Length: 514
Image (cartoon, rainbow, N blue to C red):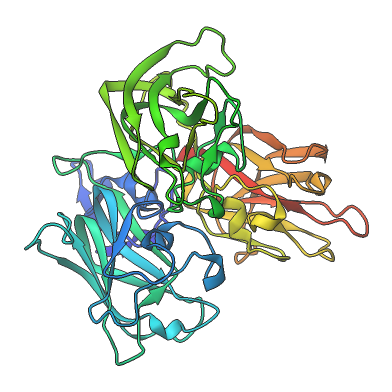
C-alpha cells in the first residue's frame, strides 16, 4: 500500500513533516512473525523528517527586474508587502517572465510553495509552471527542463501561499518559476518561494553549501551595522539597506570572524564588495580557519585557507578565495590589512562554502528555528516569524523584534521546526534599544503535536529562565535539563502586572533533526 508520512508514525520515533510517498510491504518469516519493512521511494527512512527549504538564501535570477533583486524572494523573511523590499516583480513589458533559484546542490524536489503579495495585487501570481534543471538554462543553451508541476488560475487572497506538489520527485539544481503574460498591464509578482526537498548525494553534487548564513559573527571593531549582517544571506550591497559591514577607520589590524557553530570542511570563501561606493575597501585580505575561537582562546592556531591580493575595483563584485586545500575548523576569519590613513575594511557579504564534518569535534548543534514558521498568542507589530529570521537586528525600528499585545495575560510564542528534532538548548535575545526587562520569567516547552491546534498535545519541559533580563540586547541561554524531542518549541511568558508584555528579538533553537 502507499501512504504519506504525514499520516504515519515510524517505530524509530519520528513523524514526517512533508508529504513523502512511502511503500510498506509485509513479509512473513519462517516463524510466522510479520515484519513491516518500510521503503522510502525517495530516500532512506530518516530523510522523511528532513525535508527543508532548499531555496533559502540561495542566489536567484530572473528574466527582468522591477524593484528589489530576485534574491529577496528566497530570503526566507516573512514580509509580504512591497514597502519592506522583500517582494519581487518583473517589468510590466516582460512577455516571457520567469524567476529562478540556484539551490547550489543537486537536489530532490518534492514541492514548491509560493506566496503572493499581501498589500496589493495577489492576482499577479497566476498560471505558472515549476521547472527543474540540472544545468543552468540561463547560461546553458539547450538545457532540458523537467516539469515539477503547474498552478492554474490566479491567486485571489492577499498574502496567500500556494503549493505546487511535484507530479513525482524531480532531481536537479536549478528551479524555475515560469509565468504567463496575461494581457497589457499584467506582470509576474510574488514575495517568497520555498523549495522543499533534500540534498542528493552523488556525482552530480558539488556538496557546496553556505555554512556561514545566519551564524554569529564578531569583528575587531564595528562602524555601523553589527558584524552579523555580513552573514545574513541577504542580497543588499549598498550601505542604506544596513546589510554591509565596516570596521572603524582607526582600526590598524582589522578582522571579521564567523562562528559556523559546527566543525566543518571549508572549500572556498566568497566575499562581496559594497556596490554604491568604495569597493576598493575590500583589498589584500587573508582567510584563516580555527578549531578554537581565537577571540577568546589565547594561542588558538590558524590554518590558512587562502589570500586575496590587490583591491576590488568593481562595485558589488564577489571575489572568491579557494582554499589551497580543504581546511577543517569551526571559526573562519577574514583578516584585512590597513593601507594608510583613511583606509578601512568594508564588505557586504561573506559566504563560506563547504560541508559539516562528523566526528568528536562536532557537537552537531544547529539553529533549527531559523526561517521556520512561528505563531503567538497575540501580535503587536511585526509578525512572529521575525523572531526566527536569524537577522542580527535587536532594535525595534528594524522590524526584526517581536512583541505580544499589552493586554495578553497568557503570552506565548511558538516555532514549528518542521521536523521531529532533539532540542539541546535555546537562546533568546532581548531588545537592545529599550526595555530588555520585558523578557523575563519564561518557560520553554517542546511538543510533538501543535498545541495551538491540538488541545490534547502534551508539553515536555526543556527548561526555565527566572528573573528579568537587564542588559539591552543580551542573549540568554536555557539549556534543556536533558535533550528533549519534538517538533514545536514554545516560549511561554508570565504576565507581571499592568503594562508588562512579552518582547524579544530572536530565538535560536539548537539541536539536530532526529
